Image (cartoon, rainbow, N blue to C red; front, side, top):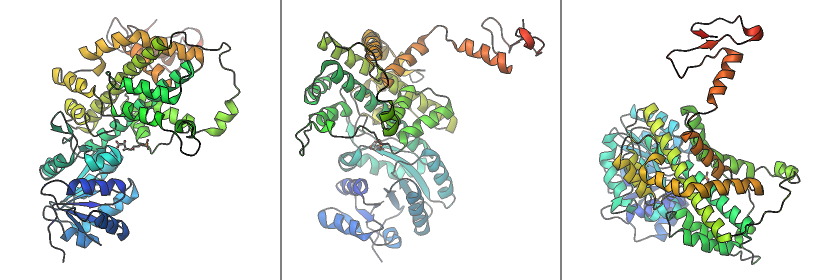
Length: 483
Ligand code: 6PG
């Protein structure tokens, strides 16, 4: 029988799991029980880090007996069936009051289902979004746990000890019950998709508009990283663009196949937004842009379709680059604003008490979308917790005011030049849609009523109306009809 000396355990020792286990073991007071289905990974971890406070285990029973009570284990396996299998095994050897944490990128509705099933055994189940990639897992990620308040009492101090620190505060908070943590992580990833797409569009416009090399554009991104755009993704864009391919001596970006992969979290964000009725157009365009890129046969077939006849040149590269920077900033504000709208709608639908300001806070460090301007989002929600749209907060209103002329120039230039800018342009359309006094939705309502008697509301009186439209539809009758 293994002695119960570990206060926390990790199941699944691929890179993310091993790094998280190493992070946990490096913090004062933690002893970490580790388990992996194939023992080699456990042996490698233990032999490569003899100094770490690990207890290696070879089966689930041994893993459970290595843990002090309440037993707390973080599952770090690939989301999906593997997670269910590990949960099954752990529920066999754990007892009521123990805590199972799923640290993978699970779909939040799976987490809701799992939490409900595990709760029936008396064991706590916590779905925790963990962001920051391999380095974040090791040095300090941003952590978004859901689950019960009871589980958070035990788990909170442990997660606080390993999370990234931003402005002196650990990047972890109890997001809400059951699937709330994975829901918020899903939104994080949706914003990550939008952010990356916007960066891609900015790079493409500058490259094709000015003819600058990837290395030169890397320098531009380095400079941008000293502005309001300061963020991890801008920083690593410079690194990626600078990279030279060892095999050919070319810029590495030019030898990477231009077909973007996706594991699905961006698509989930959009699917969920569709169900909730929230327009996350920037995120949706980012997901679709990856899909479009990954259709080589269609792209090859379409490659000789006509584009603009006039050759596009940028007269004043410096002004153009600044325009692109501001268009990126304004579009980024839209992406975050839309993401937060989806959090509000999700919280409402699933009865989660999510504090938007706290979410902005825990995204300031450790995670992939960490950015200087998350502080501004935190401030905006602190000043007005009931803020209906982030982009209407004074700081962002002013930021967009300063950026909008550039934004419009960039979107129209991209259209004239035949350069795809789906995230830039959809974000601008969203902005113009939101601020419009009248939308053509009135016409949509008229058409719906015409062909399907779907009714409409009037601007000048309460009630629901149906018109007896002209022609052979004139005899259609309905309550409250107008002529
Ligand atoms: C993070 C990342 C991480 C992962 C994405 C990649 O927050 O650390 O979001 O979760 O890198 O899932 O997603 P795609 O493979 O879909 O781009």
